[in-house]
Image 1 (tube, rainbow, N blue to C red):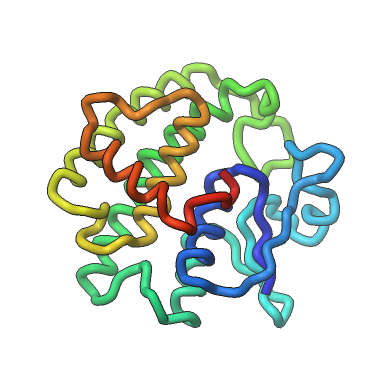
Image 2 (image 1 turned 60 degrees about the horizontal axis):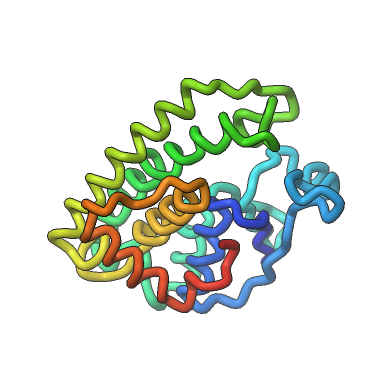
Length: 214
């Protein structure tokens, strides 16, 4: 199998960190254009017209897109060190908090990034081969959403060591990728979110979090 990723993009990092945390041996392939790292390579786009990463290419030539779907597949075929729930209740809680981290955290930062960065003028959404204009008001909305996300996560981490309970999970991976992405855009964790800051320091020290598409 091959896992296609792209620079420091947070969604590919969710998949590469999951792979590292589980200790799975998979070939990691950089999908960006060597001449223009802000673009996916022509070879990748021709082979995979959806133009999105991460993407897992299977040994039979089939492929799976989207970070959560890729990780669900890998969790099924590599059942050691479960990161998506060890029982039915835990699996539901992991999915619940993962969706919150993706939609209220990762998507909020993406709204800011895609609608303000000069490299994404006319590329307001990923995966399109037509111009998608930036919308500055979406960036403002993204900042408001992110503030609410920080508060929600901080409250949850006041009751639990990790996002979905007492065990590190895929939900923590998604939240870490969202928050590191925010920090890279100078959207820092508020000083008032002490639980979140403590958690962020702890999970950032995990081996899988270091050096992987940061």
